[in-house]
Length: 494
RNA sequence: GCGCUCGUAGUUUAGUGGUAGAACGACUGGUUGCCAAUCAGUAAAUUCGGGUUCGAUUCCCGGCGGGCGCACCA
Image 1 (tube, chains in turn purple, cyan):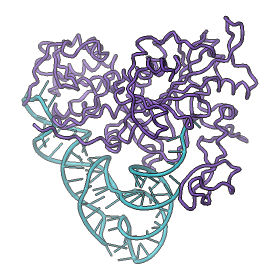
Image 2 (cartoon, rainbow, N blue to C red):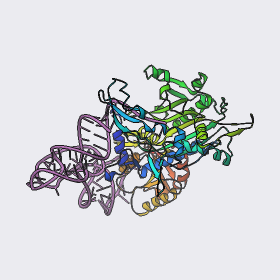
Image 3 (cartoon, helix red, strand yellow):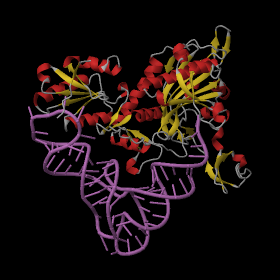
Image 4 (tube, rainbow, N blue to C red):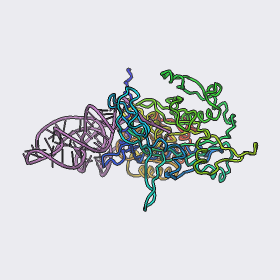
């Protein structure tokens, strides 16, 4: 039988799906929407919270060398002077009157500079203002900015964190939080927005430390598809199959940088999206003002291969800058050299809304046989873990179904659906990404058992009501194979 | 931000210078019913503002929003 060709997913189709299923809404839609802003709906917020929680478990709770903070979104205005973000502030956007090429120039160049391409006269399009400006104080307020990255607080709080949590180098600080950038043209659904969530950590290392004790064979064997700087400088985009170990060996990465890049890829493997990830090295001329080496982790989106995470080598830049600006010492005492030292920093970053979007792109599976979409999310991230259906929606069946709902609800996010045909109810849950559907049927009252139906295979097993909680826990954590969790039963079809 | 282009229920769409029809979905009720296709019913739309006109969802202008291209992206 000829396979029905499924059209390539468009980001529009995904956005419509997200709206329909309560995952993501356009912000302020009753006023016509507001470009660059999005709302997570009832289902989306569950998924997003699960994602953030999984990140926290993976990178903070599981480790001894990382602690978290949650800093204010608005910080002292001098923060951004120290960080170097204010320096590019006065830039002016210009457009060439002749060839229409848009660029930006420094404020003093206006009136003097000409188009770099054709030498034509430049017209000002106005001042660039990538940072969100706000004011603080009701009476005679002072200017302040909403943070464009979460990093700065982790530098500013460095000494307090090290002291109160008794951390010694090397150690990291993580936070997940909202950031704001006045993007010129928000685009591609959630991908480029003006308000977004970053999960970012600053990992502090002794400046002389070259070795990374934690870089073991597990990290070295992490396979990656690499687009390196040289290839890009030649104008090509050929990917190299390599491993973290090989890159470290070839001195393309120092050990700590390699370790963290491997950790990032390993989290994506855990999320099931690593097959669409490639690593892109930044070319010299695109490095940020603070970084000596940067790698992007790009995901293959419907609109192209785009950055969802990054890894920058920030060196001692930020701590040194804040020392200068504040006049305060930001350093630690090194017992071995008996000297005060300023740590160097590796910064792994994740655009969490982008990871969310990548998860949906990978999960979205139109099933031609079932004639509905199946959202194959990782089970542990699914907004709802199980849905309970009474086959007969009245009488003792209904009571038993309600009872199951009550007791499962204590441990899992569950849904209950007694309306429509059973097939329709399965389809609704397939689209919601619910991994398991529990059906209470005619026999359930007699044998005190129910069927569990698997989202991805539609196979069914019969499980005792008393074992449901433990069975679900094992299934969701992946510690138990579905067919081994109960007696496999034939699916009855009309 | 610039250029091109688009904007009818939640979704997909029909239609008209005289205020709109459908399908799917949602909701309510019925149906001894395991993979969206059973019956009955209900709610639900012309993106917003201004102009032309006796009258505009339809024509014109502007805003807002989307798509594509350019540019930008700590």
